[in-house]
Every structure is written in structure tokens, then in C-alpha cells.
Image (tube, rainbow, N blue to C red; front, side):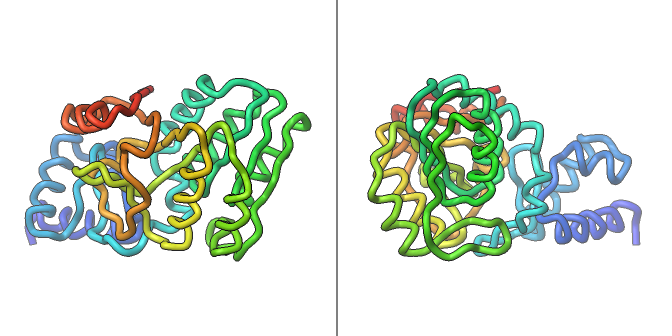
Length: 253
């Protein structure tokens, strides 16, 4: 087996274990240049063995998300900066509804500097974060707790959130396709996210750039259903054009 073939096999095994990795992570792990990693990914993607994402790669899958503990480590600094940027667009004293996700958790942490927020969430993790601020009024949806990430899903959670009308809905997703569809994996989680969109006066999407072009099975909504998108840049022009085409404000860190 040639050195390149051996690296290709090792790269697939690495991604199979991790689910996703950035170009920089792969270059460090295999002690090669980012350019070499990109060539490896392109070659494997042409064979249908891996999936290219903006800034990284993952295994080909449209039905199952990367496990929560792994997702927490993906683009962690980028997610922190996205959350900090979003927080600058949320005033004190408003109501917000925050859904499940590692990026929305970072947004919740960034909002801790605010005062007198009324927070509705279907994430125990988000509720725990927000409860650290004694001026916040934190309300948690009822429903089935999903053990892998402490998310609350199901019809009970939908009905609960539908009772509210909040100033800002803050949502995360797992993928965006080239038609502008916002995608995720668990239909129960998606149903709650749709309810948050319906019950929010303004909807802010927080997502790192690895989600652009990433496949997922269930449609949450469309770009035209949100007001602003917060991500890390730069993103390809085709994505920026798509976002602006649908009247969505784009903020990048």
C-alpha cells in the first residue's frame, strides 16, 4: 500500500470515529499540509467515501447526526465567537426562546452578561447555563428528555412553547442545502424548532460554516423564515448570495 493510500484509509477511520474534523485538525493529526489534506478529501469525496464540508470533512450520512460530545468539540472557538456576536444584537429585558444545540449553548453563555431576560428553552443544558444569572426568568419546556444531549422533545414540548410569544427565537441547525432549506436529523427536535420559529417575532439562526452544504434528513424551515444568520467567515459567495436573496441579514465573525 502506498503512503497516500495508507493515509486515505487512516483518514476515513479517523472521520468514522470523529464524525467530522476541520482541515486544520486533520493536517495536525496526520502531520501534513492543509493543501495535502484538501487533496485527500477531494479524492475520497469523488469516490463517495467522505463528505466535503466548508473548512472540513465528515463521513457520508444524511440520517444520523454526530454524537453530542463530539459535536461540542467541533469548531468550538468559532461557536463561542458566533454566540458572542449574536449577544450584541439582543437587548436587555427581552424574551428569548432558545433551542437545542452546541452553538445555541454558546449563545446562552454569551447572554449571561445581559440583564432581566425571560428565557424559554427546550434544552436542559441551556436552562442550566441561563440559571446562573439571577436576573433571568428561565422557563423549561415539558416533554421527553433526550439522554444524549439533555434536549426536551416531543408533542408536549411543542404544545408548551406554543403558549408563548417571544421577542427573539434563537435556533441552531445541522445543515443548509443549496436551495436554502434548513435541515436537521431528529423529527421530534425539528417539530419543536418549527414551533419556536412560529412563536418568535424575530428569528436568529446561529451556525458555524461547516453546516453549509451539510446533508441532513429533515427540513426545519427555509432561510426566508428567519431574520438574521450568525456564522463564522468567510463563507463562499454562493452562500452569501443565497442568504441575501432571501432577505436575511448576515453577520460573520
